[in-house]
Each structure stands twice: as C-alpha cells, then as structure tokens.
Image (cartoon, rainbow, N blue to C red):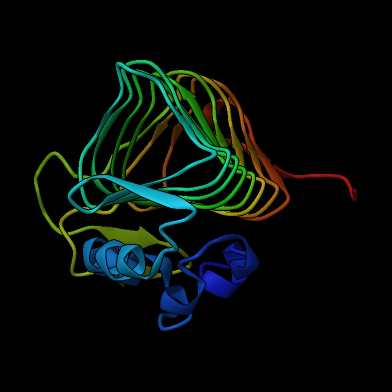
Length: 220
C-alpha cells in the first residue's frame, strides 16, 4: 500500500525509469535534482525551450509573466504555471498540469494531469496522476523538532531523511485548507475532507473525514 507500484501508474511521468529503481517513493527524493538535469539534456529542443540554465519549458506550456521558475526544472506540455507561482527548483512537472497562483514547489515530482491550483506548498513530495490539492492545502515536510521523518504505517518505517512531504497516489483528492504532515501517504482514489490535519498512511479508495475518521468508499 505504500510502495511506488501501489501508488502510481508510471506511464504518466517522464520519471518512470528513475522511479522504477526504488521500492518506496521517499527513496527517490534525494535524486530529483540530478534526475531533472539528466532528463533535460535529453529533451528535444524542437519541443522544449531552455529558458534559463537547467530550466526547460515545453513550447505548448503557458508560464504567466509573474511566475518564477528556478532550476533545475522541467515544465511539461500543455501545463499552466500561473501568476505569482514560485517554483524554487528541483521540480519535475508533467503534462497538462496546473501550478496555480501563489503556489510554491520545491524538490517534487508532479505527475501528468495533476492540479495544484491555489495557495499551495509542495515540498519534498510526489503527486500522482490526476492528484489534486484544494486551495490552501500544504505538504508539511519537516518536523518541529527537526528529527528524521518516520512513516507511520502498520509499523514505523525509518526514512533517514529530515525532509519528507507527502506522497499522493493517483487520483487522490485533498480538500481545501488541509495540512498533510511530514511523511503522509495517501492511497489512490482517496478523498480528504477540507480543513483536515492528516497524519500517517491513508488507504486507497477511502474517505478521510473530520476528526480523522477513515471509511472505505463504496465500490466504483
């Protein structure tokens, strides 16, 4: 339930070969920067423009004038990076995504058709195919005591990392004004109620309700 193969359809990211080299998604975080640089050098210049050092933007993507994109970064086809977005770097953004107004992203893999549209923070995270963050929702990526992150699954898993954000499976939908605590994993097709403070692992095909109640969805 927490493995890369449980969470993501790798057909929907150019990071597929890279991710196949790991069992768990947080293991991929430390290499995102170099991954982007390596991928960027292989991109077709007829399709991508290197707008600054190690920043490649597909020619069909739309980057609004007030957005900032730091390197290394790849912005995929038909993606919109809207006003006042702050892409700090080490961001691999897929095709047909929305990086919205006042959104901040750093060290993240964003799969195709993912929406991060309003006032979000995404750090040290992986967001799956068609995942969505509601307005104001954030991925908290560091503990208050600055200790290494543990994954709170059936048993605690030591990551060895000080910064781990959230791993959102394909089609995960997070309501507005949620806080996803460090090391949160949300399964495929799971919905998070607005204004939730989420911790641990939320199974696939579930609904996370007010107060942390988790119920199974009816069969689709």
